[in-house]
Length: 146
Image 1: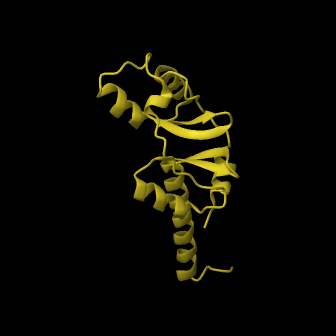
Image 2: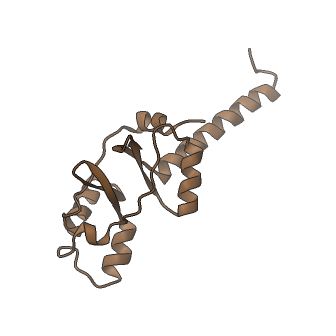
Image 3: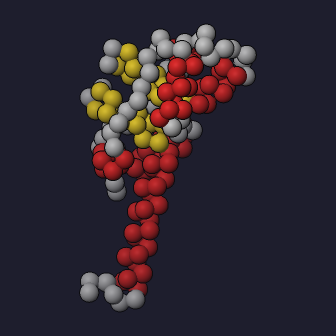
């Protein structure tokens, strides 16, 4: 089973984050510019929350708030579920499914080293299943080991 570290090697480790003091508007600009659905919220090098499109939709738009007058810290999700580089892709899927989340920060000794999305996890699981099916087909056809 593939690990988070292997996914990050293929995906890349570039991370975009936002300060809790930034405005929601600034966060949305960065998310649009980088084409991401969530940003880790980092203060003094430490992960303190996560801000997602879901936070925006549910906590700004529906509550009549203004994104230029609201800080990220007011709306971010403070309880952040995360994984470490040694977790498996299946462990990520189980956590994302049970907690109904789409983005998992990756921490290595309390340092943010990446972020895994539901799309990353699904892509990796499908890839592994396709490989297994291909190998089984070769075995059934008597082509295995030739």
